[in-house]
Image (tube, rainbow, N blue to C red; front, side, top):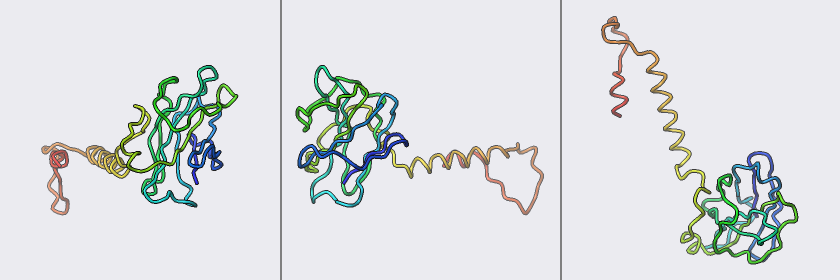
Length: 180
């Protein structure tokens, strides 16, 4: 039902089902991971009105696991990128995973997905710093493309005194692009 991509080097689609509505991925060598992508495989959708809360847990052999809410995925938003490099061990909140046995390796973290009602998901607050960007990727692309266009066009800039009249060419003042 779910997949987990770890910083472009490890793809997992074999989530361990730990309860009827809870799934866990083990993340070896998590200290060297900056981002985690959690996605739906497209084989089984969420039931109507449900989505998946995504949690992260640091290994902690002494105090048990501490789970941190990263965000959520839904049928309408089937994937999400989460930044885990700035998360801090020991900082967590209420979570649905209970007292699960922690992985035995000191460098093994876990990503958990808990199937929950959508009304509950939208009311939860993810841990600060976990989400990558709320800006739509198309908006980011458009902004970068326009910056590039302006920079490229500016490289041909000449002053008005340097211009030679040419009736076949049209000139656009750089200030008009900046104003736009």
